Image (tube, rainbow, N blue to C red; front, side, top):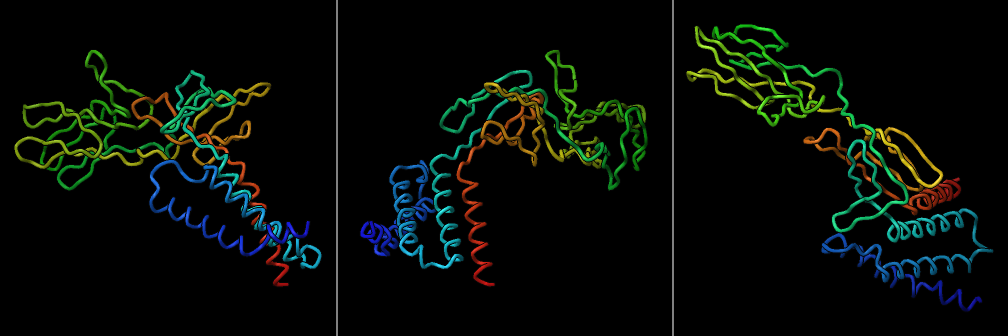
Length: 302
């Protein structure tokens, strides 16, 4: 047994393994544009060999090794093992959802996966820090816009606010309407009058619109229209388990060994949401390994 441990734990094996793994990681970072090396059999074999080498080396010195050193080496083993477990079994894919529909299909750029549970989107919400403010910039000044309000610009031009839109859309009959309750496409419909001449002007947020006679243009400004966050209310179902929860940008949900994160949305479809589904079985061994390394270092210092 000792002969096997000496052979398996030899430094003559450790340094070539470390070199090969480092070279593979350098190639992955600098040159690889295809399938990552982390889950390939030969890379996993190198990781298993390095793990065995480190464990055998430690086993030979177990009886005489100080406890602080044992903690350090055990931590290193967990970090190495957890890192390679993540490379082999880590999962990450996007889940495209539409309100009222249930799905278990998650997608990457190259594949479709069926999850062991289903997800139904109840509702999607964009969150704002207060109510956004509309104003009209003209001639170096910015004047607030209120529904039904009217005022004069510095050059004497009259402005009347006909309608303010949060998310302007054009219906099948050409009618202007709100597509959603979110500020995805803010706009303002104004009546601009100069003398006896009146015209309707449609302004979109941040885009200047010519204002006749070579005079200064009009620009719609909407302050606070950028969402502060997003959240999806979902219903998760698996065999014998059911969970209804709200998933936010910084508040993921855990279910059936997976974590679900709010990932994106579709401005063209306010009833749609995109979640990121992840599973990483190696993360906790890595955390535990770092904790053991920290404990060993503390004992070393003391």
